[in-house]
Amino acid sequence: MPDDSPTIKLNDDPYTDILRQLLVDMSERRENVVNDGNVRLQKYKTYFRSGVFTRSATNLTHYLALRHFDLRHLQIRLAQMGLSSLGRAESSVLSTLDSVIYLLRRAIDSRHISTEKTPIEYFFNRGQQLLEQHTIELFGQYYKDSKAHIMVTLATDAAWDYEEIKSLMSKGMTCVRINCAHDDSTIWLAMIRNVRRAEIEMGRTCKIMMDLAGHKIRTGPIELGPAIHHIKTKKDVFGHVIMPGFIILYPEEDTYSTLSNNDLDYFRVPVSNELFKRLKPGVHLGFQDARGKQRYLVIEKVLDEQQAYLASCAQGSYLVSEC
Image 1 (spheres, rainbow, N blue to C red):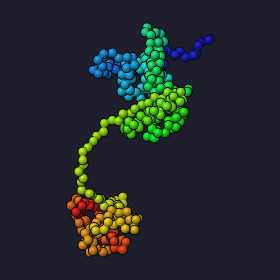
Image 2 (image 1 turned 180 degrees about the vertical axis):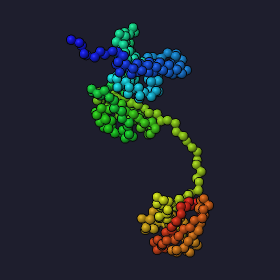
Image 3 (image 1 turned 45 degrees about the vertical axis):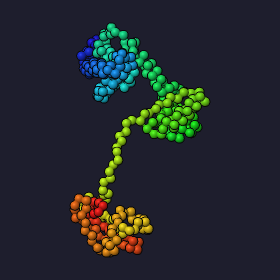
Image 4 (image 1 turned 90 degrees about the horizontal axis):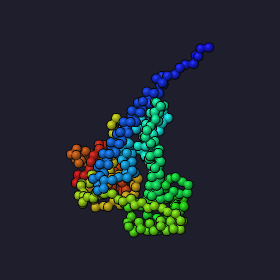
C-alpha cells in the first residue's frame, strides 16, 4: 500500500528564512554592542587612573550600548518566534544575546553544537546575583517577602513628626529621599535622626538618599520696563469684533478703593482731575497706543455716583504709562 503522507523537507520550512535573518541581525547587534561598549570604556579610562573595570561596569556599558539602538522591530520579530525579546537583559547583556543566538543556530541546524560554555554557565546566573546584591546595597533589604522597594520623598514636617516616619516604615518603606533643593541642613539632620530612631525601635533598616540640588541660574537686578496693559476685544470665528474691551477711568487723586461694583473686574486707569471733570457718557477720547496706532475710548456709564467711569474700546489696544 503506497504511503500518501507528505514528505516535509527542511527547505520547505517557512520559518527557516526568518530564523536565518534573525540570526544575522542578532549577530550584528552583538558585535555593535561589544564595539560600542569598548568605546565607552576607553572614554571612562580618562577618569580612572587604573583603567581596570569590574564585570558589572563592563556590563553597564553593554547595556547602555544595547539601549542606544531602537530594538522595537527586532523585539517584535523575536517574540513572534517565541524567543526572548531582550526586555530583561540588564543583568547580563552579552549572555542574553548569546543565549538567543545559540537558540537560533540550533533552530536552523539541529546538529549545531557549541564548543564554548553556555551563557548560563559563565555569566548569566552570576549577573542575576550581582544585580540583586547591588540592589540591596543601594536600597536596603526588601520588606518582608516583597521583591520591590518603596522610596518616599520626605516632606518638611518629617523633621518633627516622628510618628509619620514610623508609620511609613510599618507600611513597607525601605528607603527615603531627602530633596536638598528644599529646607536646610538643620531640617535634613532632624529627618535623618527620626529615620535612625525608627530603625532602632522597629529592628529594620531604611536607606537614606540625599538628592543634591542642581545648578540654579541667578540673575542680577532686573530693570523694570514700562507698565503695559492689553485692552482685549472679543471676536467671532471670522475675526469680527462682537464685544469691545473695557477699562475703568478714575481721578488720579482718588485711590479708588471705595468702588462698590466689585463684579466689574476691569483694568483701572487714573486720569488727571481736569480731564475727569470733563467726562460724561458718550464722550470719545482719542489716543495713540504703545504701537502708535490711533484708538478711541467711549465713556459708557457712570460708576458709583461719579467716582469713576466705565469706558469701552472697539479695537484691541496696548496702554502704557503717559499714554
